[in-house]
Length: 125
Image (cartoon, rainbow, N blue to C red; front, top):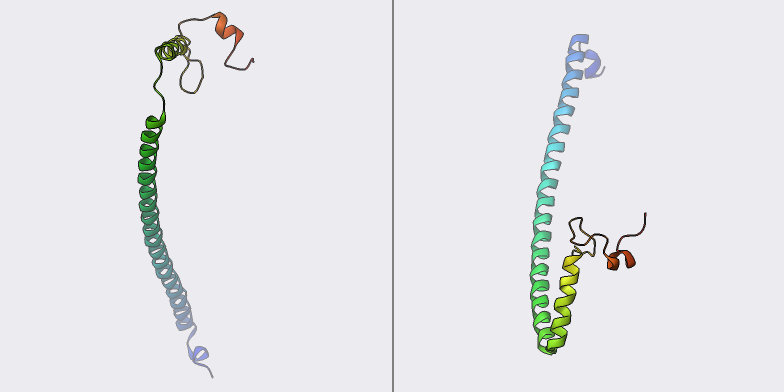
């Protein structure tokens, strides 16, 4: 005769509930431990990845600065005529309310301008 069959029905019920509760508690402890371990693992990996990214960003900025200095060294000076052309161009761009993305802003100074009607920047709708 097994030890389980020697138990009274009430004792069997208590033993069954004890096993169920024990399994739930054990599962919860394992789950919490696993999540804590994974959270720390992800946190360390994220910090390491961020550190690497920041180092790469610093290197890229340094390279960009060096490249800009090199370009400036090898770029010829603008003539007075070129400077005047550049000023006129920038004034024209500013008058027509174009931003860096070449989109027309709503507050431009010259609505109905022949330049904008001839060369529209927005596709017709």
